[in-house]
Image (cartoon, rainbow, N blue to C red; front, side):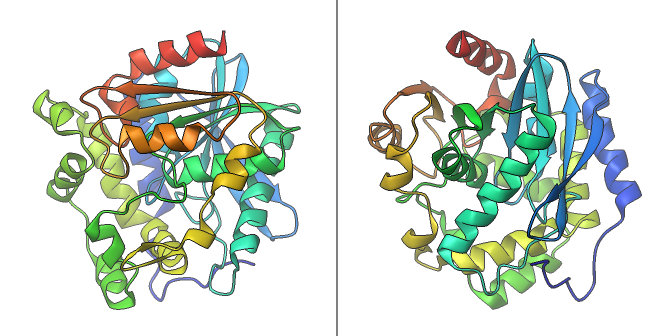
Amino acid sequence: MTAVAPRVSRRDDARYREAEAAVWAHHGMQPTERWIEVPGYGIRVRALEHGEGRAVVFVHGNPTAGNVFVPLVAAMEGVRAIVVDRPGCGLSEPLDYSEMTPEGLRVAITAYLAAVIEARADGRADLLGNSAGGGAAVVAAARRPDLVRSVILEGVPAIRGMRLPRPLRLTALTPVARVVSRHRINEGDLRRSFRAMGHGDLLDAGGPPAEEFAWRVALSRYTDTYWHELALIRRTATWRGLRPEWIAGRAELEALSMPSLWVVGDRDPFATPERVRAWAAHAPRSTVHVMEGSGHQPWLDDPVRHARLAAEWWG
């Protein structure tokens, strides 16, 4: 089920890889690229690996790619980070969402994350997901508990009841999605997005580094990530918000037999900490930690603190 390619592909793998590598180099790292076949779907997903120790699979949100986690990977010790580009994101090959059902999406999510774990994690792994990637981690962990040791949800995950801000809801409309997919993202757009996601303090303190902005610009200009992610939004949401049948809900939360850590910023626009606590209450072995002054990608505000929190929780 490979996806229909955009009419004019933006792919320039060399320029994208250059921007991607600069983020890793900024943190003194050089990852190893891996490609994983997803049985039954005819696609490969890409992962970047770094470090030694417990296998942790990082699953990003929408519309980003695995590189969003580099600051957190750099702060972690004793971890073999397996940083995945979700299908259609970064350099991973895409899925076709046009005829997919809610159950079909759950099966596909489980298939690609199970393939990554089985190929790269020697049997079991910890999952760490953000936003749409957090919802994917919940689905895969609920369906394949034999492969998942624990789940960390960084930022509000895509759980039934998640609130989409108005700009994201509007991208569910095809004309708006076309305009967005053609727009050449620039640093000003990204700065506005960071503030909208609750990261104003990070910007005011001089972050993120220039390499991070350059990579995010490259993601929009030299890959087809936005095209594929907007196709997913159009399938799973309306201008009113997410379609509940497409999103992980109480059944998946109650099926999380492994420990789960929910780390949420109090400025995250997608849900309040109280709503996150209510979701987590359905997961039998859950812990919730609220980060004050932090937004939707909370590790960006203090990667060292997040790495320490994860290490202590795993311990």
